[in-house]
Length: 630
Image (cartoon, rainbow, N blue to C red; front, side):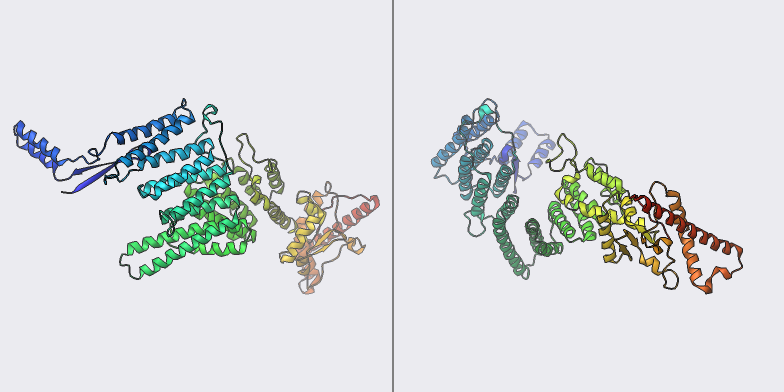
């Protein structure tokens, strides 16, 4: 005969156990039907079933006191949920449960069958802690929590109930510091007139320190490695939010020492352990715990701006294998790693890391995925990538999200070199900066994010550089004023800074004439003819030195003609400077006509430039000049 136990879960985590015999009761039923027997046979079968079914929910041991305990507990919960009850009535009702069970235990000291003699006291103490926290009486809450831990230390509460209860308490304590609540406060009429509140940080530290002491694996009165480790992680996260780095470093030290001991135990046991499943499970748990520790360390070093240590820990975290960390933990590590790459201007690595973080947040269903998607788009633009991040399958569903649509428009303007639209979007999303949010249900502007604001300057520099290269590509000489106008009228000093950085990086070969405000591209000039400089315009000869230019409102057709014929003129200049390939010796009339046309265009260009430079000098006007190819 085998005994099967069925556990029925009631409200507030109560469990009732029923045991019955699996010795063929169904067979007796079938035999009774097949026999076509008399009523006696049926009665006998029923008696057999009653004999075989044993009621072992301790009804034999239950007495009036136990029933009174259960009723008292649920009556107290009913008062708590009632709008007509006063705080005093609620607190006295739960305290009555504790007093009743204490009396019940004293009356049954000689009875060895009471294995859960403090079950109702444990539940009542939990409710008292929650209620005192709810009404803001933190001294009483701390007192009741200490009494709750004493019940746990007695060893009469199941581990699952302990872990569930303690985790709930710690979350409520953390919410006290963060300014959130798990339940709405009671109405003013139900709130005690004399409540005592303490500093939330002091309360949180006291609760966590007391909890860690009792569950310490080697020194605690109720050792629980799993709960101690998880409590330490939560404590470390709370200390990080409190910006208590010194205390956080001690917590990290304890966690690392514990993990090293666990790894040593696992490695020693692995050499003699025949059960590979157990060894694999231990390795998985160890790797998972290690990732949790790394996540806490990375947050600390990121807050301290210590990129050297952050990089070391990040690289270690990325090499951990075999663990199954929560996607949110992995996303946090990758997000901070992406910020580390951004600080080092490693934009390609940052783009890849932010993308992995975005996918992890998305897998966890965490709203932080939108924040990380903004960082991904920003890193992609800083990398000057031609790939639109929103073309990926993972990011495509969010491109029209109210919080993301501004970034969608921004990256579109970036790829199309629409610098005016780009800067306009930045200004529109800067208007609410510093006000602590937009309010009114409006989507949060991306410039409200401090990390985004830190890199706006780099974003502007990147798109300006991108547009600048496009502007100067067809020219060998161009005025800085013309470049500034194409870059949305930025100051000339900013134009010079951009050109200097390109020249120093080696991506632009040229010189800047600061006196005349002209860029001379030596790459094209040095390539003309047999290493000689191109023919000099009359404006250079007269000592003006600047590019032949005109007012921006009157020279569009001339500039277009000069731009379209620049290739032909350059080719003709090469031919004239190289007699062996000169077109003049060729009898082809079409080629001769091309050479004559090129000469005429060059003469016309020089004449117009000279005339306008004289007019500018005569009138003393400061016009917006555009460069002309000579």
